[in-house]
Amino acid sequence: MALFSKIISKLRGGSVSAADWQEFEKTLIEADLGAGLATEIIALAKGMKIDGADGANGANGIEGALLASLTKKLTTADRGIRIAADRPTTILVVGVNGTGKTTSVAKLMNHFKNLNSAVLVAAADTFRAAAIDQIQTWGARVGVTVVAGKPNGDPAAVAFDGIKRAIEERVNIFIVDTAGRLHTKSGLMDELSKIRRVIEKVSPIDEVLLVVDATTGQNGIVQAKLFTESVAVSGLILSKMDGSAKGGIALAIESATGIPVKFVGVGEGVEDLRVFDPQIYLQGLIS
Image 1 (spheres, rainbow, N blue to C red):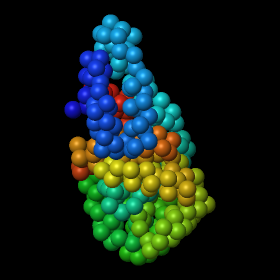
Image 2 (cartoon, one colour):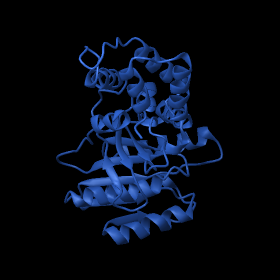
Image 3 (cartoon, helix red, strand yellow):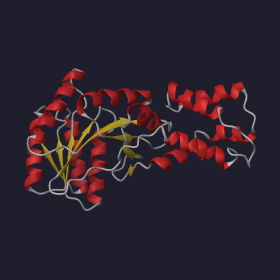
Image 4 (cartoon, rainbow, N blue to C red):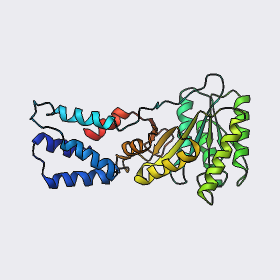
């Protein structure tokens, strides 16, 4: 059922009790909108004048007014991937371990391969041998070359080798899978900054995509803010948006950070990546 369907139904009926409003607010918070945004939306809904189906906010007017208000909570930033015309488009993929980062890299390589782009991937998450094996397996399945080093090797060295090869082979898309955990937060961010500096000695970085697990709720907002402080995140990939997520996190995270959601992962398969469409997403919450 759409997140806002009960609210809309009650508003159409013209009678909403105090208990109803409390229930609606609890539902929104449990759907990962967060207390602050839930309170704002409840205040908005309370302010709607209900004059019956033919009134200004009656029937479809209620949905339209709510849709317009929710749209304002989403960022207006560009959701497209900035594609370079005469050099490899370089994409760093960052995020904490367990969010589906490496799987998201595999989905991205498949996405761009399906657009007839030549793709190269650097397995720079050298602190997890399993991550290197995983991305190499995906690369073999999709038909994409993966540049890798030794486990526990220097991630920046792998990224540097990768960008040099990307330029030499004139690939269209160069994707870097980065580490998601070191001993301290500062260590992780320093390592990501080092990778960025090393690559930019040779070629610009076009996108930094942060993978956030949609099932982690408000913790995803905390992650987005922390990474943005260090690595200038340009877009989000929401993983695990396959029914287990509660729905409101895309709205909440964009409202809180201003970072655009660019892709959503809707399953475990390499094909299960969708370009995020904000209007389809909001319409799904409403009806």
